[in-house]
Amino acid sequence: MSVNKPHLSPIAWADPTRLQLFDTWLAKCTKEFSLDISTLGLASADASFRRYFRLISQDSPPKSFIIMDAPPEKEDCNSFVSIATLLKNSGLLVPDILNWNKAHGFLLLSDLGTHTLLQEIGHEFDLTTPNLTPHLSPFLRAIDALVLLQKVRAPHILPNYDETLLQRELNLFPDWYLTQHKGISLTQEQQNILSSSFQVIIKSNLSAPNVFVHRDFMTRNLMIPSNLSEERLGVLDFQDAVIGPITYDIASLMRDAFCSWSEEFVLDVTVRFWERIRRTGIIDANGWSDDFGEFWRAVEWMGLQRHLKVAGIFARLTIRDNKPKYLADAPRFINYIRNTAQRYRELFPLIRLIDKLENTPTSQSYSFGRL
Image (cartoon, rainbow, N blue to C red; front, side):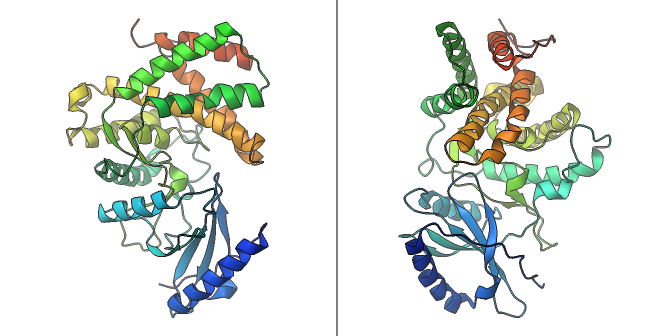
């Protein structure tokens, strides 16, 4: 299969010394893998300090490669390498580690392609899409990958998604979104409402069975392989994985950071995931195998944790890291938060507070949950 020459984007280097280190390392890789340096260009940059370049080889037919530029003082590649090896050995499609300059944070990786799951379903697939059926098949492939991912066993490799981490993530919302972005000084009463609401959310999420958690399992990080005979989706951006609630990644997939889908479709895909995961026996202890309603409630509460966290992260990316594009999607997460919180009695204080801080009218809806 031929590989098209990548569209080149200029690569800027703020540090000339790092550029020299990169050139020296790349020269060695060029000899080993017959790389065509003239095809080197910027592929993407993410919310971290990592950057990705793409280039092809001089072979016939040429092969495509990805370079990760991850300054070691800002990014630890050890987790990426160890988790990539673990996932590959567990049957998932992830980039191969072809060369790793550990001292300077340069990695040469195999290329899983340029076509994401988001591109496959199309940006136009949103809340207004009347016919959902054509978009189901790609999500079923995502469920296949997620079930396989959750079967991975790594208790001594990954950190636990424990109460301390959950609390630290939730604190991003008041610290960065409310205080830094919105300029709000919370009263003691408002701080107490957030604190008590966070404790309820944490308690719910800690009750879920623990599995391998990707932590950013969404359409932009799932790749459609260029090899049409490959049925698996490629999985990227897994370096922050933890051992934590089984509900996290399905919530991440269906409450996407950059596009929203109808409740009908979200429920449809989540039920299909539940049908698959219940067969593994992982959720039997919680009684979720027999009650999708209880499982759905847990997914919503885990999603609420993520929505609050991401709103804070997007504000931090804008204010601290000068990456303002992410904050444009913050309203999506506020909407997620409001839609979830207004459905459960235990979260009424939280929705009232957020509506007041956002200056939006409190919605009236039927609620679930227990007093």
